[in-house]
Length: 284
Ligand code: PLP
Image (cartoon, rainbow, N blue to C red; front, side):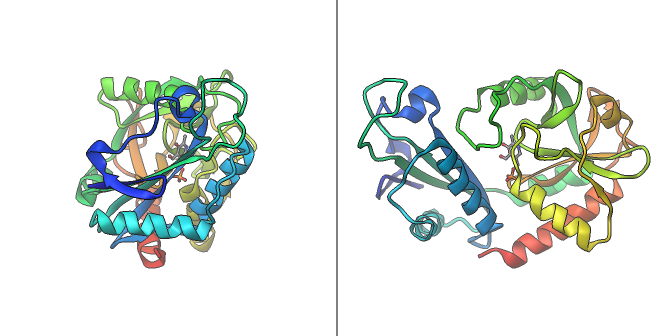
């Protein structure tokens, strides 16, 4: 395997950035993940635009165009011979003697990795439906920026894994669901209405979420972009999460309580199918 690190391709096992990289010391950096189908990137433009926005919000200037970044993403996929999998980019403010304030005249660090994923595993889990647990959302106030500061997300995911669950569903002080630890959360509520939290809230504007919203409209399914509580999620007919790496994943239990009839619901199943078909078709 190889990784792109600041202009060169290095053996993945030896690829390094400096100990005073600000990503390492301050989580001062952003990232993006695309899923890869047949060597091509899904939802290419959406993720590239969000990467640009994350960089702008943190005022990280990179001396590379989106087009040049695209060339690196594709070259990293090619060199790793990835057919189906993911490609990951991380851009930090760069390496400088440790000081909270921004350094001057420092080039950002850019790294890209890509790895294959066995899609049949996700398919098998989606067919069966996954388990979830609830977890308090302890993150900062700018979750709309896709930063590498993922410690609260990692702690939540670990809590889920220790309970044998696939995802942690995060909730705020009001008991309202924000999103998953690495996904956006959706329900089909008791009244049969599809709901997902609005993006005025402190959540990530998922690219998969946006793609699903378009598909939902095309399928003539009504969507209520409105927060739901943990209790509503437990009483829901369906609960599912979306993300670039898990597509649409039906959840069939929350904190050990069965969701609906305990099987993946029709809306989640349909959306997974149409999303995957479209993502494959439109990958570039
Ligand atoms: N929410 C969080 C906290 C995430 O980390 C992610 C993806 O990594 C998502 C939502 C889903 O976003 P996307 O669909 O763009 O992958």
